[in-house]
Image (cartoon, rainbow, N blue to C red; front, side):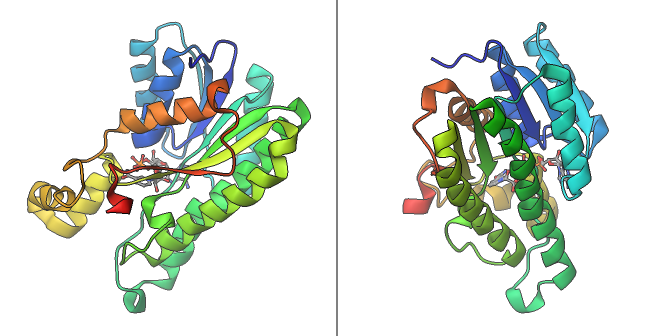
Length: 259
Ligand code: NAD
């Protein structure tokens, strides 16, 4: 049974896609939420959607760039100052970067993607773990990707960053289990969010929907994942119902990784 009554959950990338879906799912179970994103307008949209679905929800917004460690410290402190603790942390903000063969992959692009997807996740864990260790409890879900457990191609920065997220997750999971803290990663396949739509448009232009159909034709389930399917998984992993799952990576990809 997933119950977030009196629980405080912090979500990065809360303005869109998987972060928004997790906020919707977790708010329905009674959690108090702090949503972080660099895009203030999209945070407001998420807040409106959450309040429409869960009018009683306690929800606060914090504009921050996860690549800046001071801003990360600030969103963690804001959460503790506002709600007194952090029970769950969905460490999720990320970007895909421009696709290209390794030899043509921009070095600036590589550094940018690593900075958001890996440094940002590291800073988040580092500062949230201090709070959770003192509490003696907590749960973290980092967003990796199928591209963090196998080769996808044309995504040097993304693949390196997401493999790094898996490494951070396993390393810290074994460090903090004894303090009552579980740390896991999710590895989504193709989930239809603004990020994936943008990527399909990059490849297919006006024909992006046809490219999308072709893309999922090789998936065992022949479809894109839905953001709410990921949101529900995150809710389970951050809840007390899943406490013995630790240092693990959970695929949510319709079975594509095992085809
Ligand atoms: P999205 O673009 O819909 O949402 C990402 C959010 O992160 C946006 O609101 C954006 O403003 C925010 N963000 C980006 N950079 C930021 C920064 N530096 N600081 C603060 N906020 C920042 O994308 P999504 O599909 O929801 O992706 C969420 C996570 O899931 C990412 O880590 C992504 O790599 C991962 N992922 C997505 C898929 C998929 O198919 N959608 C698959 C595997 C992994």
